Each structure stands twice: as C-alpha cells, then as structure tokens.
Length: 120
Image (cartoon, rainbow, N blue to C red; front, top):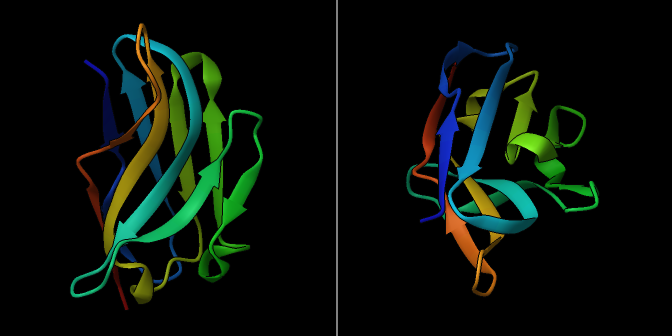
C-alpha cells in the first residue's frame, strides 16, 4: 500500500515562511514526478510546483521567486519552501506523486492535504 503523508502546514502572518514536506511510503519501485497543488475555498485545485525524477522543476507563475520545490530521493520526500507568503496563498496544499509500485504500473497518488493559512 503506497501512501503520501504531508506535514508542515499551519498559520503564519503575511511575509513569513513555511515549509511543507511530503513523504511517500510503501512498496515503491520508482517515483517519477512529485509536486504540490492547492485548493482555496470555492476555487478549483491548482498546480503550485512539480519536480521530475531528474530534478527539473516547474512553478506556477503566482509562486515564482517565492516558493522552491526540492526532493530527497533517498527518503522519497518532496519539500516546498514557501517564502514571502501572502493571504492569497491560503489554501489546503496537497502532495501529488506519480509512483510505480512494485509489481504494477504507475499510478497517481495524493496526500490528505495540509492547511496553510496566511493572515494579513
């Protein structure tokens, strides 16, 4: 059973920083892309950042220069360093990964979500 577990959400003030982490566990043969999405109340889920198995990163325009995504390949973990947070960044942040479990085909997995609240 493969699962993604997120941590690091919380309440911060505008301008402050926060780091989210997501660890993949279970019977894993390989992890391809990993990434973060977010969903604010009343809005659709949107991509924040992704990072490939070859460490190529991709960011949504609204976080470029403020957020950094990174991976710890040995620990099957992805991190999202968020700086200069704004109230508009308030959302539930979801970890996402394209994982190949042992003995089967690649599957998209989602974490349970972690709340990030930025007060003005």
